[in-house]
Length: 425
Image 1 (cartoon, rainbow, N blue to C red):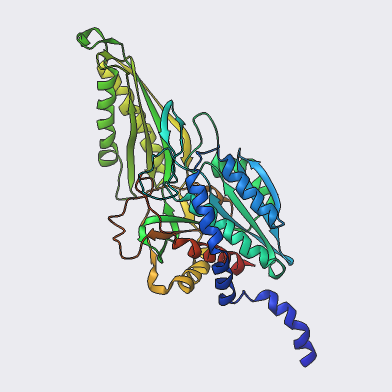
Image 2 (tube, rainbow, N blue to C red):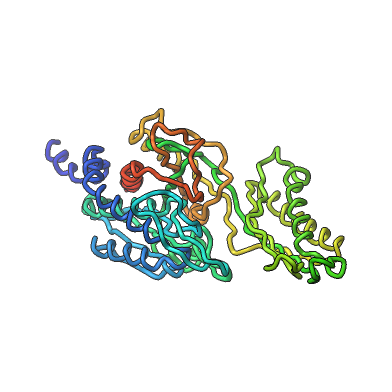
């Protein structure tokens, strides 16, 4: 009997997760690198499908860890496969790499000074959503897990994804394109994990929700075509700007009057309205750009139809024409697999303490992590990034030029990603 126990000990060692203290020590050791990577990426942000510098940094790091690396997926995406010491499932960990066309207003020594052209305008570029942290966190987790490679019963797929915020107009991108190009068919992960830093919680807290968590999102464009005229003689033309303004106001009645919001929330927002270039010329065309957020598939289609009807009929009444189209950014609802959620929440509580892990209400923001979670069971969690002692409700939100993420969230993110992977291997 004693001999049998001795023979079984190596097998039992593979089945047991790494001791918590060992993981925490490894995370502390890599933390200075994670902070340095984050600051470097923050100071050098890149828009979607153009993350060339960030992708090169990631690729070099993964190759240096001895992984099998594939670059250039979906333009700039990078995937690294860490093969464990014995057979087992493959677990995917994902980070997004792109920044936003936002001019940074945070006073940091590593604040972004980058500018670029976006939709014909000179704009600043900023990691206003924390993706710089996501990349640094996953790079850190890759280093910790690579050092434990021989103890892994299975593989870890590290996904560094471009264009989560949406690709440039006329291009595909993001998670959807990575999957279309065969990412999961090739590596066949059984589960996928992701995280997002957010201003809505303090550092040391996490928010999750089982089932539907984040909204489906559709980008849309409405082009209004009128007739140009001199501003002193508007009756000689058809004012596309006034017509576009009437459409914009009309859109706000759709969610409040046309759909049953007791079933699920729905939000229609116009983020950009453009028409004309001179103060004394009524332009012949104007454009509205916006987003639709829904949680119910039937309601989603109803809203598409109502926006088209509202735009076309409002324009018709003004003597103009309007064309409604859906844009390139169309994300499904982000759903956390209930079984994987039940498995993962105890890990959150172990790292952060039970009192610091909360169930969030429905989140009307959207995430293209949803595409991965439609293919295999997924778990997505929000980590607080507002400094302790500050009111997260008063903190500038993600996508704000004043968004500030406390670096105290970095080691938390690394440890969670490592634990998520180890718990499945």
